[in-house]
Picture (cartoon, rainbow, N blue to C red):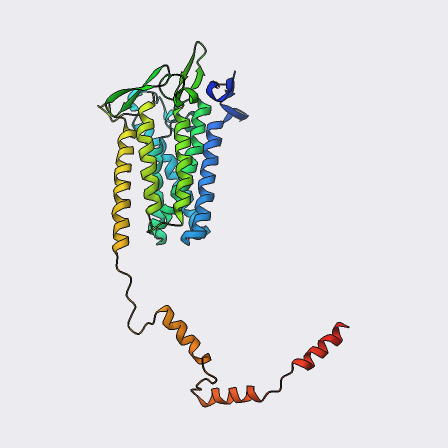
Length: 353
């Protein structure tokens, strides 16, 4: 029997439903929905980067392909390596196949971001491309890929939060809090039911929270894109937005990764770091950009208005000054030429007939 995720969203009118984790099989190879959805997210991110690079950043398709290939490879490697290194104490890795089994889940987005950033910087250095522009054109695409990719977690029946009753737990770093989650609250409306074969329990659909948060951020950042004040600002907005949301959503999850030897959730700490650094750099660089003096014109260089006046000056009077004998002869020859408009018109009319 194929693996299934049995779920419901009663607040949204979705009753209990069984969803297979495997989309189809090729021989003994199972192709899971998780892998298909992650791949679709990567394709969307690439298409977005291509369109932004072409429209806004002046990055050609060949460069986008080179950046995309290395970024995707290092992003996947980084996401898996990050997850494996932070779960070594679980002793779930018996052989190399267990280490690389990304089709079973186990990709940490922060590891993917770190690996992807290394890929971007590497290609930009080798091809001498302004890396700030590349980060800007890629960052929103990453958001839409993350928004879609969280539904891969849904198909796997993972990345959900604490059980929902009248109240639920919420951890803000090392501090435990209680959230009202009973009838009439948004948590109660969005609660997800899961059936493990023995009991039916309702949980926080944290994958859904993060998917919606990223989707909203994608829309807002795209609306702002044409108003950006400096290269790199869009990427900073991404890190700020995602870090702030993840910092809180992570406090609801039951499968968090922890800093070894502590009870601190890694993703909450990184979320706080990215939020503070991203917001600080955005404010500081915006102020510096605003207060930067306008670029001075080089000696002998005229401004745009002066150039237009110079270009229009010969036409302001009845005659233009001729600076050479050759130009004077040319103008005289042109003025002595008989107009041919009428004859040409007659010939044309004759041919039309």
